[in-house]
Image 1: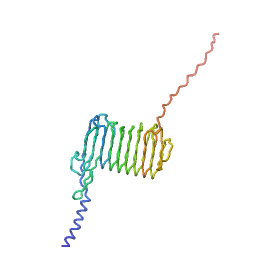
Image 2: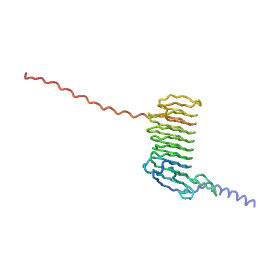
Image 3: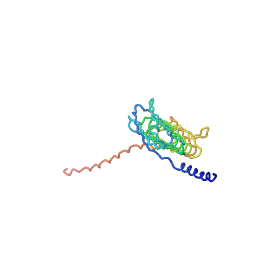
Image 4: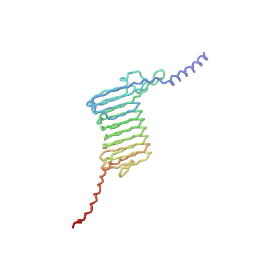
Length: 276
């Protein structure tokens, strides 16, 4: 009897190892949806695993494509919830939290979201594992991640961007209306138009600070770097623990070159009148 039990132990351990080592099959699916822009002024997205990208598109339409990978056999519509209420499109993963079922199979969900929206759309994104990228949005942008980079290029959105492990990069192309950017482990890079008016505060523990913006730098009571540029109209708050901070001002447009004036043609000499 003891010998039989002794033989069962390694068999059970082998079965356990096999169940843990063999990944469950992934199922791929895609959702493509569009909504009239007149009924969607804001988008709120809550996701856990995957990338998120926003770009500008048709002024009359909000479009979304979600590429799903999961070992859950539910339909795509059961995995991703979508509804519009009071002018806000709400999108959230369903069942994206990890769960374990016999025999130790990990049932996860990964979604890659791609949106094309009118420029004035307001967006709010919460992601846990994955990068967030936004191009061209001019409304308000509230972006959060835990493990992932955040990149935004905007003509003039008001931006809040926070992550824990990852860099934050914000490029303000035309106008600046305020930004609050923070990370724990990663650098922060900001690019501003020449006429940006901002009151800035930089908080960091380990890392360098550099800028080509003409500014008078002071210290707050906490020892943070602070100052004002061009009147200090909008806030620029930057915070990192382990990472550098760069605030760069793009050069203004060069004045058009003055066309060269061709020299006047030489005056021919007067001919003498030999008939006199």
